Each structure stands twice: as structure tokens, then as C-alpha cells.
Amino acid sequence: MKRILIAGTAAGCALVPLAASAQSSVTLYGLIDEGLNYTNNTGGHSAVQMQSGFAQGSRWGLKGTEDLGGGLKAVFQLENGFNVNSGSLGQGGRMFGRQAYVGISSARYGTLTMGRQYDSVVDYLAPLTANGNWAGFLLSHPYDNDNTDNSFRLNNSIKYASNTYGGFSFGGLYGFSNQAGGFANNRSYSLGAQYVGGPVSIAAAYMQINNAGATAGGSLATNDTDFFAGREQVWGAGINYTVGPAILGFVYSHTSLNDATGSVYVGNFSNPASSLKFDNFEVNAKYQFLRNAFVGAMYTYTLGHFDSAAGNTKPKWHQIGLMADYNLSPRTDVYVQGMYQHVAGGSAVAAPLNTAFITGADAPSTTANQFIARVAMRHVF
Image 1 (cartoon, rainbow, N blue to C red):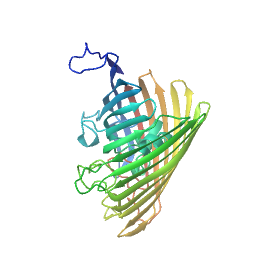
Image 2: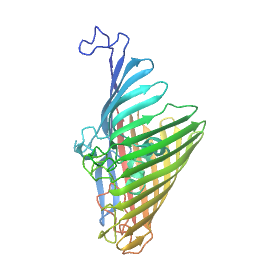
Image 3: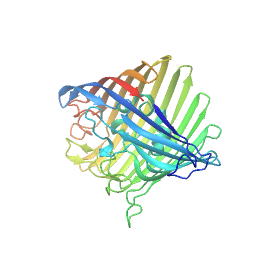
């Protein structure tokens, strides 16, 4: 990680007037995640593919602070996501699609920021899941329906994050629609809280989005969210418990989408579901068996309930994920991952996708099962 320090004084910074005691810092940082994936069945064929950004999304960014005195600091962060294979921009082609914000941080009251930011589910609940902590994209819940893998961010948002008080912290976010005459159209808001005390970490979060994708200039652009719906609600809670070198976790999350439009199809991709619900139950474990190596496992059971013109469908996803990671140095590691998914429930006509599906594969499986294995390298700078 390259750190650039700028000492600002009235004499040294002629372009920007600063108090003699003011100090600023800017940090350039990044991460590259690249590897090979094997998928046993994508549209009836096996596939070997080079894929970028699975354990963590490949990125580079700038973040900085300026001491304003009196316990206040100005803060900013600009973070770009990209695909290592092609060099193309991520997050729908945005220059700083992962994060882009500026704000004020108080040593006493917390931090207030404005821009494109993570919601409270990502900030508070996701770190207790496997995918939102040590595993990443491959071990996310079906369709990342609860956004614990931060598939999308919230534009035009103002966000508050408290300091930690006796192990307790909390925060919230509001994303403006920026639409004249449509204040409530394509807006979003979320709340979350976390408690860390001794070996226990507990968190809960709630998020609601109104008319996601309704306007390209709104709080969620049309190519940025997994689902388009009149109302999307996500809420959940989880707990992690540390026992020596092991961390054990349980997370429950619920996602409800009303008046969905073209999000998920049932019955051979011909009938869009108008109402969708997901209940995710996850157990996970991580064991740090060496100072520079760990293994992790997770099992997720997801119960779905889809309504469409073809009737009601209640698919059930069973997912088992494994990961082993070894650090070659403080900045470079290699890892292997595997994910097995089985879909059950519903008739052959009214199955959710009539197949198993793991996000990231080119096509769904032609059976109710699918398996992906990955070997990769990650470098942090």
C-alpha cells in the first residue's frame, strides 16, 4: 500500500489556505484477484474460465483525511472496480463504481458522508457471513438476494456511522431519488447496528428500496441492482463466536420484493415472477490453523417463494462452500474455493430456473445441481 503524506501549512500550500497545524494524508491502495474456475455444467457443458474478483473485487482507490482541528477531520474515498482479464471498468462502467464519497468525521460524534456508498446490510450484517467476510462472491446467497456481497451500492446517499461506545456501534443511510416531483420514487434507506464484546459479535440491519431501477438517474441505476421491484425489503441478524483460532457463525436474512419486473423467471424462463421472497439460513466456520493460513466452510439453506402467472413456486437451495487460503507474504496470498449447489422444490414446469444456478457461471446447469471450483492469487498494494 503506497501512502502519500502531504503536510499542509500556510507557507507550504499557496493554492489552499490552511492553518499552520493542519495535516493531510492521501493513501493510494488497491487489490488484484485473479484465478481459474472450473464449472461442471453450464448449459450442459463443463467450462474452464479465467475470472477476476471472486474472494474480493479487483480495485484501486484513493482515500484521505485532513485535520480540521477540534476533533474534526474531512474525509474522502474514491474506489474504482475493474476486471483484470480485460482491463474494463466494473459496476456498469463507472469510474469509481465501488465507492465515491466525501464527509466529516468527529472524534466524539461519528462520521457523516455523502456520495455513492455501501448500505447498512453491507456495513453491519455482511461481515458475519462467509461471503461478506473471508470468502467473497462465490459463497454468496442465491442471486445475492440480500446484498451481503454488495452487488450494488447506493447513489446520492447521505450516511451516518457512529463511533464505538462500549462495543456498540450503529448507523444509517438515505439515498435520494434526485427526481423532481418524485421524491419517493427510486429512493432507499437502511439502518444497522453491531455489538462486539469479548468473543461475541452480534449485528442486525434493515434496508428498503422503492422502485429500484425506475429512473437511470435515481438512487439506484437500472444496471446496478439485482432486482427491479416496486418495493424491496431486506432485513436480518447474525452472530459470530470466537473459540481460540476458530470463528463460528450463524446468519438469518429475509428478502421481500413486491411488484417485481423481469427479475427472476419461472417455468423455462417464460414467466416473470411478480412477487419474490427469500429466507436465508447460513452457518459458517473459519479456522486459522497457521498464522498465515486458514480454512473455512459454510452451509446455506434458502427457501424461496415466487408468485407469477404460472402459479406459486417454492424452490429450496442447498449450498455448501469451502475455502483454503495461504499467505505467501503480508500482501500476497493464494487460495482455493469450491461451491456445490442443489435446487429442490416445485414441479419441472414451475421450478425457479428449472435448473441450479450459481451467479458467475455463463449459464445455469441443465440439472438441479452445479459445482464450481476455483484456484486463484490475490495481491494487495
